[in-house]
Length: 360
Image (tube, rainbow, N blue to C red; front, side, top):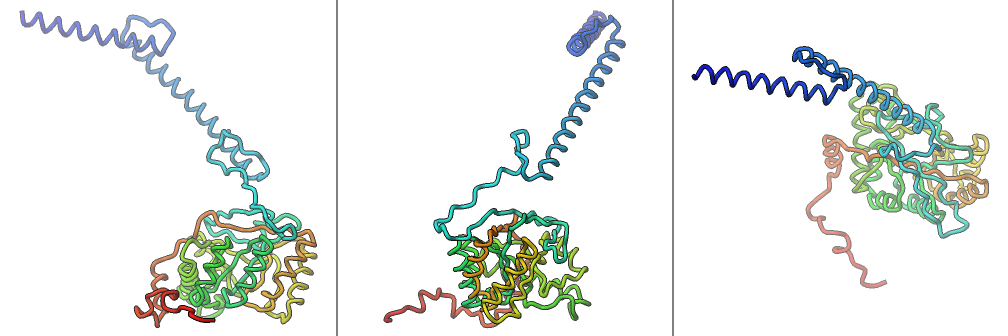
């Protein structure tokens, strides 16, 4: 009796398995199946395999079409981005309105992805020439500097326009208030080494670690002075760009800026000469990243007239901003802090709580 029960249970189990195979086959294959469980299983596997192949081909075709479309959008900035690509860049935001009808204003703002350390400025680098005819990107080196930087900032604000400042690390630590004023006004702040050493000359030319230290301490110092995000934008002193350092900046995703037009304002002694140099070279070039120095007093004095003439000449200002802020390295942050030899807990209170005007 026990044997009979076992055999009966086995037969019932086989029957249920066969029924399940047939049901599964009917669900995936419209062709009538045979009573052979083996042929049904083989047919089912074949149908499933064909279905998976078809789905794979469809997915590949869809991905290819999407990739081509995204490439087309990336290559043509004027092309409308449709809802099919939600991760694509949104349409440009309108530039903030200016209350001064006579101001130069701002034409457009461009965002720069610094991944891999792209290089700009056609004096040395020809690949990324992003400015249109009559467009100008204003840039200033060697600041911040007492008196001069504030004069440049006022002229820019009076004209509702913006610029990029490549600051020397040491200068930024001496006057962090000026660096913060620029940042608060929406200016882009990059770095220009720690102490403006020519990295193409010795000892930096033969010691890449010293050269890296000069770059990185500048990055750290400017970031500390601002007390917030700064741009991964860098300009070599004297526009001397050693080839060995270019790949290093690429690993740090710090963009390198040369220039399109060098005003050589550091050689000029009057604001009139600064204006003449800039406007003459712009007229010849038609557009460009313009290099000046907020360290130079003549340049600071020239700014109101230069901006007026730019507007009169039909030039448009383009402001450069980074996609991501720079990341400093702890090793060089500590080196910058170590430079402050006279920092003391005696001076921990804020200036306003220590010094107060009681009569004037």
